[in-house]
Image (cartoon, rainbow, N blue to C red; front, side, top):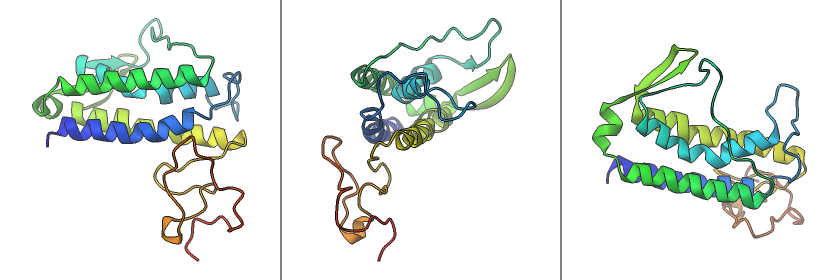
Length: 198
């Protein structure tokens, strides 16, 4: 199996958790943030929805300056509804997968990508490393932030890598780990919620 195929499989897997989180983002609260140093909910949700498309930048550009002279020209597509967010995620995922399908493992491993800030080199790594760290790991990182925001809004959290306090505990104790996002969580169960075995 080619590395590009493994990356596509991993993108699909990560997209499951991102969909579940984005389906529960409160609408009309884009400017809300839990702390003055936090990013606004709308910006964070946009990042979660659009991160897979960053693969295009990593594969088709040799470098990116995150703080270019004159400021960033990146203007994310605005959203008003969860449906908008989910459409952005699906388009972003499709774009990332198409880019990977058109590249080779040789290009991933044997060409470099650089990140700059105000013209200063921040990192230089293979394109494979940039996709693993800067795209796929970044998806999980920002989705994790988003789940904290959702918890603060009182939303029930679906599992991504393991159980949450809302999914009823560990799989070894009979709790399901992955719930379709349209299925209600068992938070009204008479069983105590625990992520530890009895």
